Image (cartoon, rainbow, N blue to C red; front, top):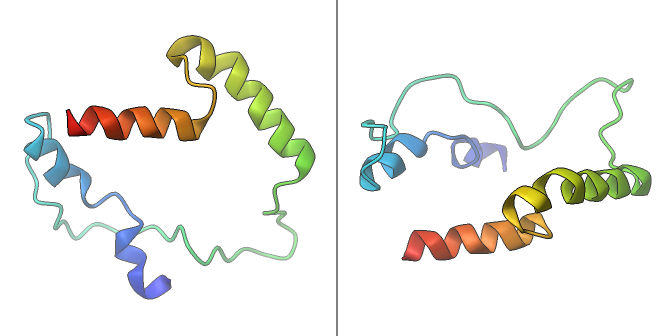
Amino acid sequence: MQTNDHLFDDHHMGERLAKLNRKGSGKGTGSGKTSSKVGLQVGDDVNVCVSDETRELLIKKWQEYVTPSTGHQTYKDMLKDFELAQLA
């Protein structure tokens, strides 16, 4: 996956925004630093596992903050509506 690191950064946003006639005039070909969102490499002292307790807390916070503002019960629901809006 690290060979496809460029597919996981936000280099595409300038071009996408330009196509939607919004702010952003770039073609997404910038030479900025990339960020590795795959192959997370940290020290042994860093916990990168999401426990069941953490998942429950994230769900609770989503329902507390996001659902009242957007009406979306889950991130998946919000993403689906976003994708449908882009097609319209």
